[in-house]
Length: 517
Image 1 (tube, rainbow, N blue to C red):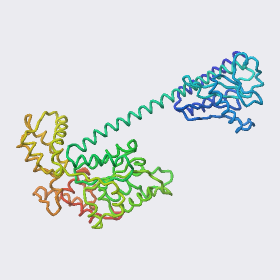
Image 2 (cartoon, rainbow, N blue to C red; image 1 turned 90 degrees about the vertical axis):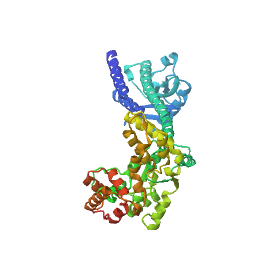
Image 3 (cartoon, rainbow, N blue to C red; image 1 turned 90 degrees about the horizontal axis):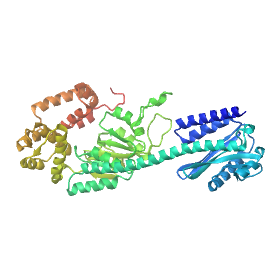
């Protein structure tokens, strides 16, 4: 008999140790331990009860099908036991017709007959604190004494305490990492906002103030500014400084073809008809809980503007893949290089959409309106470019003066590219004033910053314009297709469209039918 019970104990403990070895979640591990005990032993009622300041209060009960006792009364008894175990962290029994535990010392233990015992249990101690108990109605029956039952149950309680300790350690570590992550994000965001607002001008100080003031909320933000002013960069900073920083930041390029953009935003209307096929997540799905950045929102077609208005008004996705609408928690951030108020007057942009996006407007000043900041930007960009290209250069005083006086119609983006070209072209250790004319004259941003009627094209530009227009016409005025046709990236194609002022022509000629092309 002794050999039989020793083998049984060993098998149970081996099973419990295997559970500990693969335990990832406390609740699942406890369920598995109770399952191991109830499969190996004639237990009809059992529970692991935990209550710890860092763990949720939990009762993990087991009742066999043959157990006819009132389960509500049993759970009430478990709670009574737990309350007293917190005061006296000792093994205990509950005798027949009793509702309170009897805590065991050696004298009491030997005076109790096993057939008198309704429940027996032992505390689960985490650190030096009684955090709960394991309770069973029976254990080894006639194969062991009550003392052996209690000793074995204490071993199981210690193993459960180890699993709980591991979860507490992981939880505390996760909280520490979470706090460190928040602090790191804050430091990085401060660094990034310093890059976006580099300078000492009043305009840039006001910009930084507005970013910091608007970022923490959930209201839509509209960023207005000329090409190259850093709207996308500022949008990402606003997200990083918000309470949604840990959630996705999803960018929507509103200049994409209407059909493609509609599908990317709201899903394919036909996908929901195919049962068993997982629909492709939309951009709205991906941004759930975070922010959706509508880059160049003025490029949206009127039909997509209408769907976006519906999306904002209901705070629900207009996704037709499912039989009912679903709530999507998203913060909207939009940007525009144009004048949306004028677009409303022309009838190319919806008034209601502008009203909904323009809750927190931020006007990003062009570089020519804050020329006192150019030296700070020059220093930063020159350092970055020299690091990247392994150079050590400094601008001559004449170079610094000439670059600081330039209007930079392409703003920060143009200035950065010009510095990179100067670093590559420069000979010796100094950037001389003689190096700047070529760079400034080749400023492509100057051309597309002018009104379309004022663009002066060279012979080479005229040839390029002819090729771009022909490719667009061959591809039904869809930019992405025309870009592939010419072997260009979408960004390169988009730049040339802005350079030659083809945006309005594309909007006029591009087919609006969803089946076009």
